[in-house]
Length: 79
Image (tube, rainbow, N blue to C red):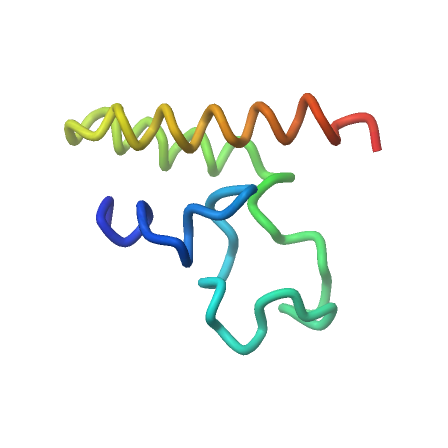
């Protein structure tokens, strides 16, 4: 799983999207009926993924993901 999450389909500018970047529904306004489920607005789920990565020896990847998520929140959080 860590190898998959480290790839370009999942480690996007805002990591941990609901679907892989190459999925036909990527960027679709009709993804699951709404556009709100993108990963960046669900920090509790992002935390659980990062915590799991740390627990399984992938603190490096957890750090990359959490840093990108925090940067996104600091840059766009007020919008």
